[in-house]
Image (cartoon, rainbow, N blue to C red):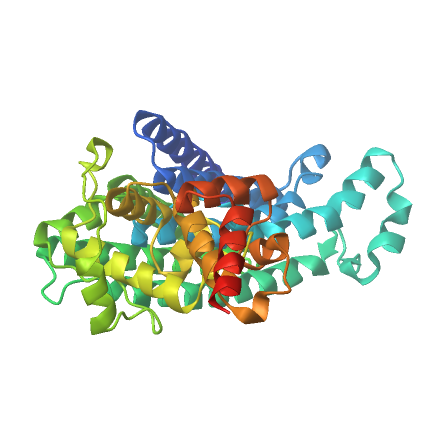
Length: 417
């Protein structure tokens, strides 16, 4: 029975790594962040299973050196699954550098266990107790027991709770975007995602408790345990292959009545909507957006929210503001935001932002409270961080250099007196 359990653990590991290569193959066929994230999740799951089985069964002492890696790798599983799940719920999801924060615990754990390998490789095992202190216990005959394993499992359990809350918030945002009469495809798709997430929670719970089940001494319990892992792993892989980035949103666009998610402060009033309709904005559809899933009513609501944000919050006064930040404020993605700005205004995001800054500069030129400010000081206040960029943008926007424009205002003021 022990040989069978040993074989099943190896099967679980090889199976997960095999799914990783298959996801990688699908990713190269059709670029998909969703499948790439799921592929790395399966790879790390397979590595975790392999390292766990090294700990459970007698192996060459050289292989046991690798076991501490399970502490770091296991801490990447929940974040990877969360990002994969988020990519299913967010249209055109893209990984950003800020997403690296999810892997900080794993990186810190890797740093903490590095001395273990250094001392083993340099043959200074006697210093292990000095380095790790309480974390390394030797009171169980025949094998070292790591207190840090229980700490990692506690952190992993806490991770599950925290990311469960994150996912519930993501669901709340997502459901606000759905039409009231959801299509049958959307309901089936959401049910699949929910089953997918529950399977992951069960899988992680089993992995956390693998040592306790193995050390109970009941071989049948261990067999049932690893059999459950294999079944859930196959189920997860099935859903991972079936889920595609745009399927859910294609269903939404077919209804053509999906409301854009509205934040609490980005609700344009009637006056703003009227200004939006009467403004002379660019309506030329570009060929590159022909395949976009962004429907007309979504474009109008996103545009209204964008104009309201720029008017009320003036985020352009921050010289470090990026399109990702504006998209996050609007609860949308950078692709949609860029499309709306390009189609409606005929300009890119950088030019769009600088035009607002130039308008703000002109407003401050007319404000007596800013008469003592230098031109550079006013441009900096309005969000410009480069004199050359400011002068070029202002000349293009107003037809005059900033100094010319301000001098003409001063001349008009003196002549009026």
